[in-house]
Image 1: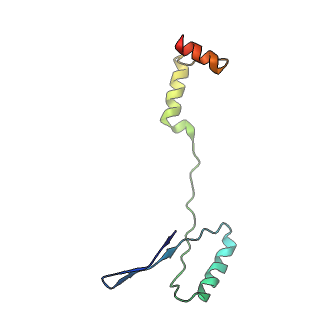
Image 2: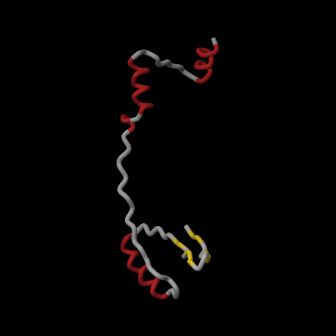
Image 3: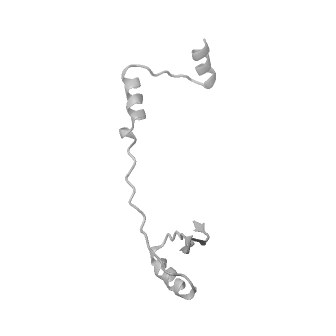
Length: 89
């Protein structure tokens, strides 16, 4: 993400550059490189949030599908042509 700096009523909006570094050992090198750039005020490190493992069995669609199986609302077709024959008669 990159935004340009602008001045509004004597307030300066600072430009923001977001770098995604896949290897945490490189973060210190990025911080060192910042010292070589004039005008860079700070470097903030934000670790990625831990993502929860997705469990499809907790979704409404899964529960609805299992209810369809339970009540026999499931159909079988040997091919696409067979499926259309069942639907269209």
